[in-house]
Image (cartoon, rainbow, N blue to C red):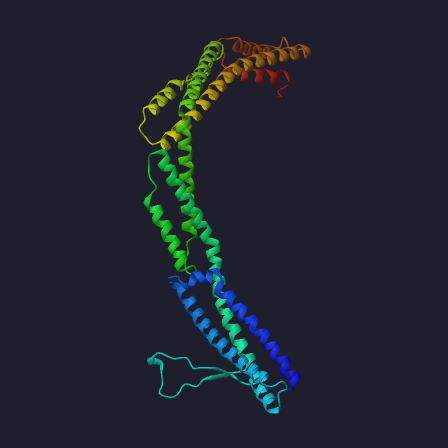
Length: 388
């Protein structure tokens, strides 16, 4: 190599050395690397990280040997302001030849031979290539482990936060307890993810546990709300029961008014629920169950009272609607009679009989709406020549 070639090679190798040193420092300061250094790993992760550590040990050995060669080259170059032929030859050998010596690794006694172990000699370029392969193996393991931890550990932290919140709610409510199996399972899942992230399969269990904790938190928050609002909601429920009674009274009045006009089946008799709901409220007042259970029962009672009032109002409307249906049939019968007169069928015996039958049904009390509707339909077809 010429003097200019040596100078250029030394500068390039110095830059390369600094860059490699920076990458190795970044590796050692990586958060996951620091965690793994003190972690108790097992399973797939333990095997993967053990292989990565072997590569890391090789990487440091190569780096030490690589830097030693560069230090020697810099010493020779610095000895004289203008290196002579001998120095240039020596520098050329160091910078381009197999100058990096990788000492043979000590083997366990069962793997040794009595023959000497040969050291490996590499050029600087070969050394950098070997270091890069080892570096990539280590960072690949870090990346895979880091990906699992980044995905799962925040969810475990969130589940633990939910567990603490549930525990606080239980304490505030003054009843119940956090299931011990949930605490134990959460601890097991965290240990599994920390010790073997590459082999752990915790997603399904974590999903299930997160749902359980979320449901428990929702129930306890509702129970606390009900405990604080019970007196007010009880008064509101009493008012709602009064509305149910009023709606049921309206339905009974409607039934009484309609049953004399319209033939109704026995099942049309309105049935009241107000007394049964009031008894449930009394039982709830005397209940010694948990507030979680009382919250559910109170919410169910509120829904039942609302539906009972709506049902009674609907029953009353339906009953009065039957009278409206009878009146609508009477109107249709009258319109058909007018049509019969226009067509000259007013004196027709068959049409007259059909008219009288329909009229008798519609003006009888109570009126059988089903038979009356069929009679009106028959009369209408008759005056239209058999067409509907």
